[in-house]
Length: 277
Image (cartoon, rainbow, N blue to C red; front, side, top):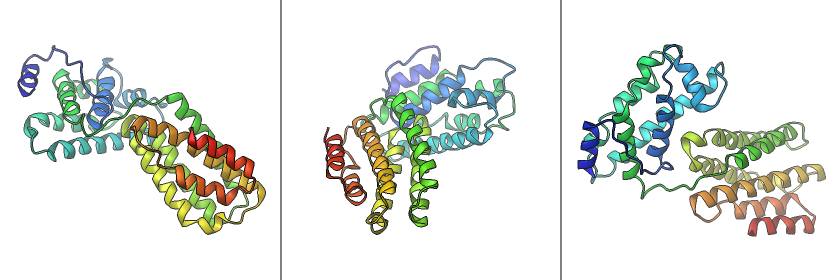
């Protein structure tokens, strides 16, 4: 494998086609490959990253937030490679200074061309080998982006309803904070993968447990609102558990939430069926 890697470094025009795009190194490769495709000499780094992240070019806050997460992704890949004593760290990580320089150049308003030239075939091929080295540690099946976007829109709607609800202030603030974390993790799935959503959902599990007393006695309209949130979490849990090929994380906390906020046995049974599917 190392011989093949060295050979490809010497012949940048050769193509390595097989790599795991779902692990951190594979995701980093795909993000930088998309950026490297931009060849227009007059385009700015800001417009390139906006295109890669599929956001508006003038949304500087989102662009910078995503660039920060990409930089964190670079650090994560470095740590994972260095943590395996059987890998050739020097060889696999030799282009990482160039990668870091391309991500945080002199500024996003600068011309892209001198930045993009750093992301040549050798750099991208090295990330494919990093992805191959990590393939046994990270596996995610592709997720349906339309389904994630649909859940994000539902969560956005729930945010508005919770803000004007009669829920206790501390419970309202806690739920809004957890929903915001989940929505952010969905927006960052291109960079952080489905595991980022899993971590955000685990945080919501903690919030449900911490606020179980407040969940015991709510008005009917608030019980319906919380039941809708529980149903949405069931849907999202099904998506991430399928992608990660693991048991659902949210089954029991959802059942707990439903038991606290829904006094209608039939409605509870309907949701139980959705959980068990």
